[in-house]
Amino acid sequence: MEPTSHPLLTDPVTEDRLLGGKIVLRQGQDGYRAGMDAALLAAACDAGTGARVLEAGCGAGGALLAAAARRPGASFTGVERDLTAAALGRHNAQLNGLSDRVEILDGDVSRPFRALDLPPFDAAMSNPPFFDDPGALRAPAPAKHGAWMADGGLSVWTNFLLKAVREGGSITIIHRADRLADILALLAPKAGSFQIRPVHPHADAPAKRVLVRALKTGKAPLQLLPALVLHPRQGAKHTPEAEAIFRGEAALPWL
Image (cartoon, rainbow, N blue to C red; front, side, top):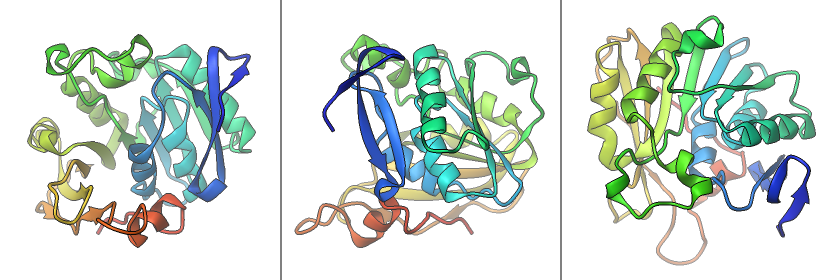
């Protein structure tokens, strides 16, 4: 939709719709914007009734609110260091009538989890910044730097997630496919029972994303799950499976 002004931001915001219109998301026009990755992360959240779920780096709440809509029996907490995005996320929670189950805290993943003074969660999820080497790509716009660049590296995010969940709790991450080995190595000392779902742009193209789920102290063998293909080469914009996920009519289940 067309950008508008909003009292929480000095820059324009847009009002977008998620899950086939079920969620209204107001987000900055020029900063990080929730999109496909947030939708897939929310679809991969499998929290049951009564579960407490944390999202590290929740931005304006795209994945957090979509996950809450999908899982009405669970409660959700987001942590976001960008104070403006966090405030906008709290506004979005209220706008969607989810403030009773969704809270967003001002916090920084680079600080220890104990700084939040919260008990460990049943599940944690995150879409960490995709880059930790400023020389690996052209510098992003200043408004997007925090979402694209992982200060301190990917290990800061995995360490935070490992501390954030109880023993047996789940950690779900969406990231670049070429960082899969790094993700497994960083989580493996304290987590296991890995399940990996590749995400391909086309059926005949290499995976660009991976969804990784691990259990803290899990011991089961690694499982490579069927891939999700996003786009057909001809015809519709999305495959039927992907379209159902984006509309909130299907989830991305784990075994």
